[in-house]
Amino acid sequence: MTIPDATLDPQDQLLNRALPAIAQLEASLTDEREAASLAIHSPDLMKSLTNLRRAIVEERDQLDALDLIVHRGWAAEELHSRIISWLLDPSAHHRQAGHFIAALLRATSAPSRLLAADWSAARVQQEWENVVDGQWGYLDILILDQDHQNLIAIENKTFSQEHSNQLTRYHRALAQEYPDFTKHHIFLSPTGVSPYLERDQEHWQPASYSVIHDAIREALEAGVADLDANALLQIYATTIRRNVMPDTSIDQQARRIWLEHWEAIQRIADNRPDWIGDAKTMLREAIAKHPSWELDYEEPQYVRFRAADWDEFPSSRVGTGWAPQSNALLLFEFTFDDEIPYLNLALSPADPGNAEIRDHLFDAARQNPAVFKPTRNSLRDGWMILHQEPDYILEAADYGPGWDDGAARAKIEAWIDNFAAKQFPEMNRIIVECLRQH
Image 1 (cartoon, rainbow, N blue to C red):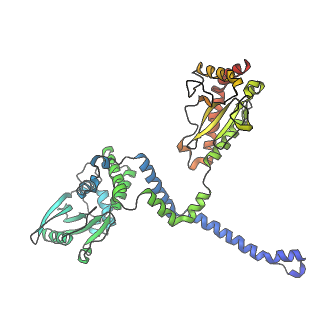
Image 2: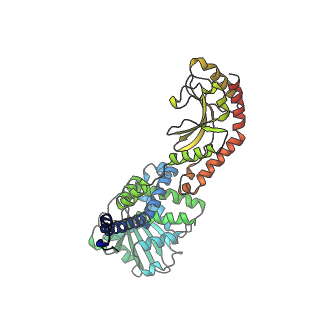
Image 3: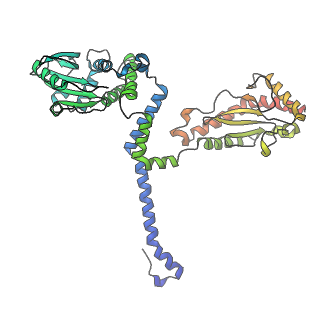
């Protein structure tokens, strides 16, 4: 609400006129924030990112064993037909044929009679032999339930095209052989293409290999099959995704997600964590809690500190390797390996007149293997690591949704407190004794 200008001084009049524009800008910013929030929390984006993460984990951790064994044999239709027949066979020991048959029927708009049917007594036949007009044909998969007079016919094409009117002939052969059966004809291919001829399109329902892949993933997540069957299901799902289904490479998925959700992803990228920067802050704060330690020279990949006890000895200040910021001879340093911190005790270069103290410190480290773990067996003029902790402070699992909830900070503080209580005192005693002698 604005106030009449006549009651205001000139400056307030200017502000009064600006109020509607300010209110409009505030509303616009509110709308923008709400739109950004909705975009980031979009179910489609969440699902896409979840699938992408699963693919990345699969590529990193899972071997495409089928490709290794058959060496590109996955290109053969016969191999896929055999495995798919096994998936759809009620007598197979995995006992999940009902799940796979139902998924295939739902994805191909099967008649309701077949969707509701009990397929537990059905038989699966590969390469069903038939003759139409004197021409032999071999339908890839036939699922036949004689008791209820239902059948599912599947013609499988992976890396070849239909030919010789085979779909027309198979439809006629099935009609002649099983005239009273309720039938469902499926044309299976990597992309789910429709049959070439219009007359075949009336009878054959297209299905893509993503139907098989997704049904396998659902079965694996439900954990319904035994361990042996799960192993084969995992292998086959990996083979389908990597070698058969188009546009499923990780790079292609990532590009498609970016194109569809680029505004939300850009906002996410603008707010990505600075893993090393955050960890360095946590390390500095944890170090500062220990009065016997002093923070020292820092670099982008390092947080360094020294024991306050060392400062009383001039021999601790003859280092020449830290640039002008520090003359320390040795410093503890947290450094990062692929963003995960670990601890070293680094010995700096020194001028020739102070070589003796370096020799003494190195000998002391070698003579106390229960305390120090040097990375070299002999002293050299340059940098030396007198001690390297064998374990990382954090692990990859810490870099995730819980990064901001304090768990990583607590883990860093607990690690440093443990080091300060159990390992540092003896290290410090030995170092101080060396420094005192010089």
